[in-house]
Amino acid sequence: MRKAKILVVDDEHLIRWSLEQNLTKQGYEVMVAGSGEDALKLMREDTPDLMLLDIQLPGINGLEVLEKVKENEEEDVIVIMCTALGVLETAVKAMRIGAYDYVNKPFNLDELSIVIKKALETRELKREVAHLRSEQTKKYGIHNIIAESRHMKNVLEMVQKVARSDASTVLVQGESGAGKELVAKAIHYESSRADKPFMAINCAAVPETLLESELMGHEKGAFTDAKMQKKGLFELADGGTVFLDEIGDMEPGMQAKLLRVLEDRSFRRVGGTRDISVDVRIISATNKDLLAAIEEKTFRNDLYYRLQVIPIFLPALRERKEDLIPLAQHFIDHFNREFGKTVKGISKMAEKFLLEYNWPGNVRELRNVLERAIILENEEVLLLEHLPKEVMDRSAGVSAGPITFQLPPDGIDIEDVERELIRQALEKTSGNQSKAAKMLNLGIDAFRYRMKKFGYL
Image 1: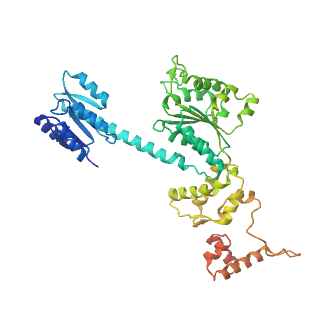
Image 2: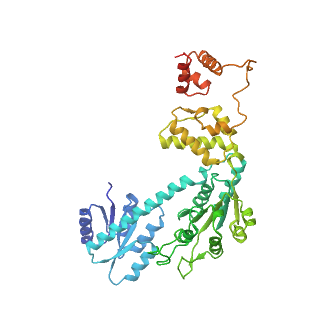
Image 3: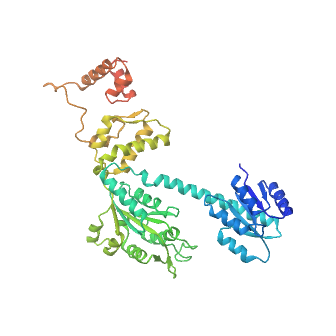
């Protein structure tokens, strides 16, 4: 494990020597500088993790050095100011500029050791958080949404506009499995809120009595099991985004409370007496017809119009068939990485059946079909036989090509037809079983089973 690197900046030789000896014994790599100019020169050559910086220095003083360090946004250096007693005002100024903390001279080495350790732990934690957020942005950014169809290109244009705007309320509508949460995440991670939390909840999965507590939190003693205060999603997501999935299933009582949050951007915890103001973007999603729900008196009219300030409609997969094969290849690549497989693509016949199928479960169903096929099969190409029965049964109008023979008046044994097809395939491929199997859209194991069955093996 790499040693943390500390730069000690002080004009007193004895202090530099003492700190260098003490910190080296603690396992740190230590550099020393006697002036602000020397410190900045050392930093250009080898950036430290942490700097112990004396305020009173010859030439440019510690505050000027701190300002120059913080001017460079690339620098990830934690600065702890060292100050003599009686100059607290200067130390406070240093904190405003960006110093992590300050310590008084003469040093208590044990206390200094604790401050340094905490500072480095804080730095490492910030790095991990920044890395995780960067990974989330890569995973859920707009570039991960497949859009070959005009429908989806229009959706992505809207997503980009919303993400760059200050819009605080968005309603995403579409069938189950169409990708509503993916769109919500793209809006969040493409926006200036990306470094703040994205908090999601399924309104249909949480009872009304618990949903208010989940969203708004509760005070200690608010109800029987409230043994301590709890912050809700609105509070935890301050500065970021709250995603309310299946908003159409929210109970009327909770709808009224949500309406107040949307209008005032404030709420009270369950059992609380104080209003809490938050800055959150609220993205709601539903697969229900909310206008029909209004007619049925199950959804509030005023909430609907407050939610759909910016509406985004996601088309069903059957309405954007141009996206289907690119989506399929995207999932194949994903599951290849996840399961260590080397599937290259889909056979033409399997593609025909995929395109003909209606996909009632939309993108989620396509993803599940391909995940199952890649887990269970070992071919380089996904064949028709690898698709589930429901896809093949419900795909209408798919034909391998023009029929070149007619059924005899007295009928025919289907196994005779199958035997002849196996024979012709082997004949056309000079006995190459792999090529013959591909001609008939069969896996090699299934083809060999038929060869053995008809005496060709």
